Length: 322
Ligand code: GYE
Image (tube, rainbow, N blue to C red):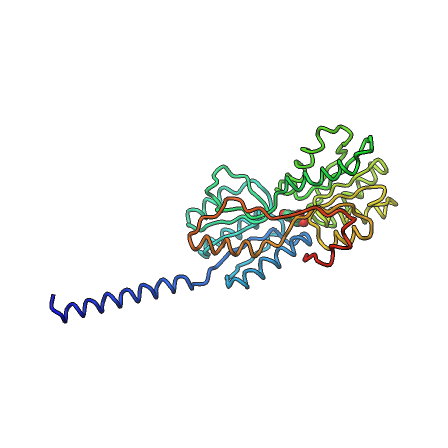
């Protein structure tokens, strides 16, 4: 090769390398678009979760497309389909219920769009339909509540009659908070769940179901086991209107540990609140970035949580973030 040719080909190679590097840098800089299909706005937990997701996306420089399914699976499926049609980079959603997700997740898979589950789990055979699940262990939350009950009533021979206000029918937290409690109390016959009904995780739903329970069971009720704070707060109102004393004659056990729950504990109307953190935004955004960068993620990312008895409520409330 002549010197001139060699020089020229060297230059071409250098230029090619430069533009390749520039191309890579460009690909890395490309803003990630995330489609997030939220459950709804049914509770204080959910509102805090939405705020966390939106703030974390902004902070991470991720372009967020957000939709609210108003607690209906069909709306969530529509939202996911529209994210597929828009060719977003990643889809994340908090599934309203556990079953019925295969078809739409197959569509996402065919379109090669990775899916991340947040907050609630799903029931699918094919684990390749989602990358990871970020959220709480609801079974463990149920067990924690059950252990609190065992401890609280250890010197009481019973019977201890429990009425249960369940979350959305078929949702992971409703299924698992029920199952976790059963696992703990099933060997102790003094505990009896005398009634169970869904209040759909809302204050109005909890109040309505509790009004009916109060009428039917009256002072036979020893414990209200509410699957979230909003329903517990509704139940407290219903009990007070029925002349009962929540937190005193009736133990109130709840989940989430929102500010509303803490205030009820400080007022002596709720006895224990099992923590469930909605602040999943930052973990979600880092998972989104990792997935786009081709990194391997663990199949399950569990949030750290604890239990707050009413005795610590006044001290802890100022540090609560939701
Ligand atoms: O406990 C409830 C909300 O999925 C953990 O949904 C979440 C639950 C939460 O409506 O307040």
